[in-house]
Image (cartoon, rainbow, N blue to C red; front, side):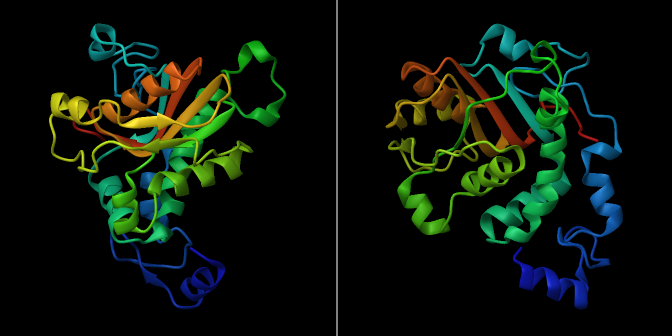
Length: 252
């Protein structure tokens, strides 16, 4: 949300995106909904360190990653993809409303800091996770980019880059495969659709992060991580606004 829009909301309260209560916050949420959504107001759930799906114990890898490890090495999710986050992400992604991104970014920032430590805290290197060298927004097909008008992953990556002083390489990888949406496809069909879908066009450093809005099956991130590692990248992490829970797992 730009400064003019933020000033307008401050002077003329608008309905909260989630409950309709008048709000003057830049995030577009009332204080109560912002508190419910924010990760620092609750105990963060244990997540599989490789794919970020909920697990019962800290550090425990999920059964899917144990059976078929993805090509990416680590993942961080701001929150579960539940009713509230789904609504906000759809507002941002399909209705071109960037104002909701303010509300969505805070839980991800907090989860990243919990996973990696604050870079400015001056902790010994052995107490900090390996921070990445560069951020790679999940590419979208040019046809979809033209229809939508923007790549939501690039906007998210830009926010992360500014927060943590990390470079964003938005043109290092292109999506040259099918422009078909992955929504509604089975995991097997997603993998087939994504085969050879990504082309790495720039030399990249040792550790990169793939940035996206939602991780569902992880097929897109897995295919991109595979392409990145074939190009010489040593470590690939994934940072997403939200992670779809396992079937039968009801997010809180």
